[in-house]
Image (spheres, rainbow, N blue to C red):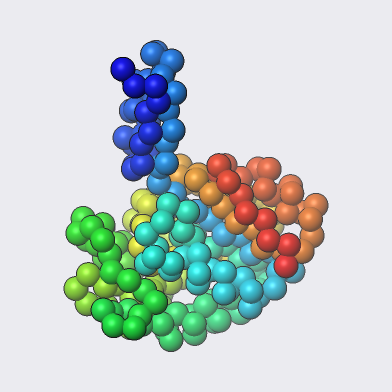
Length: 212
């Protein structure tokens, strides 16, 4: 006897709710998981893009549905983006005192995050901040992990991002759309026509456009 069903949680459960409500014509509002991509185009302001990635990926220890989890940078600026992101991350610490990175709120989430990091460590380079202990996980960057890595198959919901190079707009779109978690996305660049083309082809509920 309710007018609307509102649910915040996993994509799998959200899909089940939608299927149950559809025959009843029951309205549903679903706030589901995200594996949100950030695309950095060749002409983007690198420093601003790095700053945005740090804020977007590590705010609230990455525990937001629209946190940046996957970064795709054009191959011409990819090495510089990796270097600057790595340097910034290594200067950030976590812990119970005076830290911008808070604790993980759910034990099951903490175990999943750690499993993803360990799996990635066996497959690719991992850059970490300091202070990981107990419920605190240091900010982490995984550099170009292979597609079979756990961190690319599941939502992380923690202070961890991956970064990958791309050569063309089409490749960036393909990479961004590989996951089924299309909640939001962001694009950094200066050419409005190029940004518009990419934004219309990304499978995401919200696309943030940054003309920088």
